[in-house]
Image 1: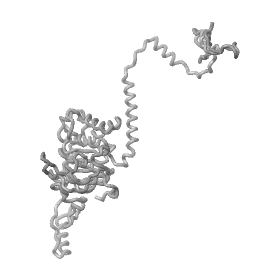
Image 2 (image 1 turned 90 degrees about the horizontal axis):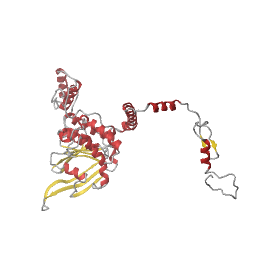
Image 3 (image 1 turned 60 degrees about the vertical axis):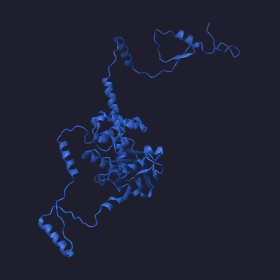
Image 4 (image 1 turned 90 degrees about the vertical axis):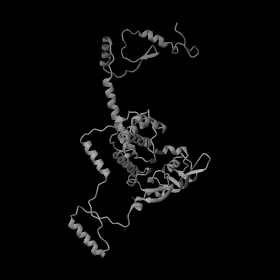
Length: 418
């Protein structure tokens, strides 16, 4: 993999001489879980933290999150102390074990975490729908979490780690309990987040899962870093050469072997010729896809949909807002029309119905200039109804007007008519 372009920027996570020692009740050193560890994670990098169980990976992650305080060394996250509260909203975290409220269902769980991050209701609902579809739990979103299998609980845990669209995503053993389909999906998600520019810290002891995703890695053992570098630097075998052809017959393979022996003076020879094998994961995925194409049923979590729209790569994200608005407007219009057609119509008396009909059938006429009545008021229609006494109305309105018969020296105030 190419080196990340963001290496010239300030590291997002900077560990220097990080050490964590756990003590017993008498404050005696009991376990040195992390011993003088130094590494940096740069923005936009997928970083692997590898090692067997008990090597100090989870302890390092908890110190990055501010859940544990280092015994010695320096640690900065987003250029600040890990205990800084403002950094928490920029981090998504999937712990090694999924700690979920058993009485909540999947949707309520994501709603709870979305509210913790202060997400707007519309954004929260949209992300919940997208994440449930992505992790394959839409069909079982209203079942209590206590009824979920371990793999299904892992899926909802991954969804809650992404609900706030974090800048730094920390995944501690993310594929534990997942079937090969879910494992492939999580790896594809990590790769896509890396393309988008997200920073991902992936901790695992399953080396095959990490190998496909990370840009750089460190390998722990006994709380110390034993090796670190890119996949190419650590995995390339310098004493072997691999040649790949389309399928060859035995005569062609023998000819290649003779040519190699002749050119090398007998020092080189063809060590092995065999047909390439596909990975078991690929075979499993093909089998499942074939079964799904035959509409074979399966209970529990489904295959899962595309990556949530708000987590997709930047070029696609630019048009997401407009697409979402169009979809919401269309859905709202259809919903309004549906509600209007299904709403019960009010009962109207026959005489009221006739009156409403006569009013609606009257032609609209432009408003005529107001006509003064008795010098004090105005009535809009050209011809008032026959049962209206204009004289009475005029006399009432005339009360509030100054009397023209009185001069400047008279009473110009308001009074009652005699």
